[in-house]
Length: 123
Image (cartoon, rainbow, N blue to C red; front, side, top):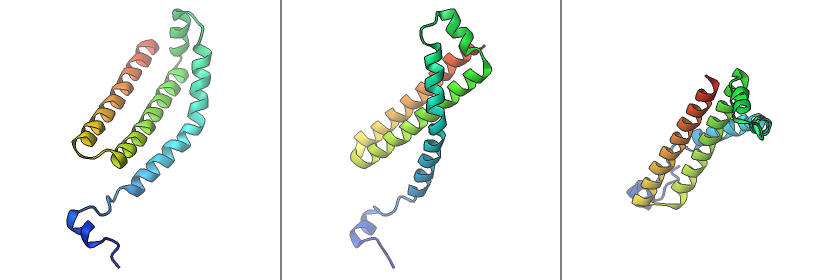
């Protein structure tokens, strides 16, 4: 049984064949965020209000640096995937493609800058 209409077959607008992958990717990142977000909030609250030397000393601890980096990566990738899904749904044509490029570039730039900052403090 075919679920595509003649029009969709002609224009090639059938299944994208990536819905299940996206769903599982979002489910896994959501499950990871359940413990990571409270840990990240506690880490940031602990560092809040200290002098620069105290904050650098706090983030130079291996466990704090690893948990901060892991939280930052999972949060940004989750938000990037959500933004990409919204862009694919609502923005079409050249504007959609440029938006996808901009969101992806911005997300990976944030990850790179965050990892650089954490590594600089930790080392």
